[in-house]
Image (cartoon, rainbow, N blue to C red; front, top):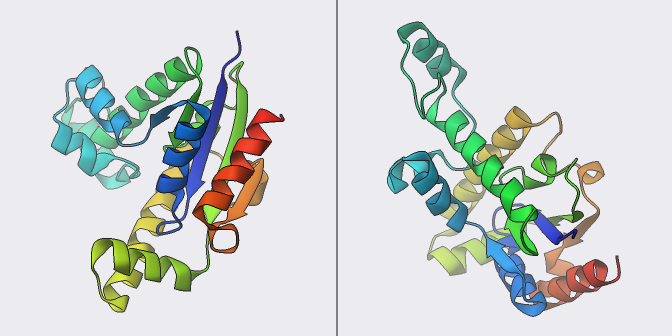
Length: 201
């Protein structure tokens, strides 16, 4: 049986997390975002705080080189925490795709599942910077300058992470089946578009 899996990449502040939650609820799919951190920490024997700090962040190449020279290991292999977490999450993502209908947020899931025998739909959510600033200010109680700084920091981290672990470029439309401007269509409108696309695929 081939399960339906929706992966959602997103710009920070675009509402991608909320859209993913609502899509999963509407379709009756399992939903994986920060739950993947908990599962990976448990599976890999890593503390939740360490896993959370390394989540969706690229490995530091200088740290990796130092660890290689010193013989320091994680998860029984000579890997940085970021690499180890990526490997464990990748295994979890593949297992999820093989066992249930699911919505998976970020974590290079579109790339990890590209050759998997699943009914895969890859989505990217974006929005104009003004809309993202407004959403981040309201959600996180930040000033405009603080919100902009947070958006830039998280987008940079996601780009570095995605580009580091794949042979693709983060946010490039060629990686996705559907890109949606959440400011134009709204949260619920974006949810409807995704659900319609998946059900009719």
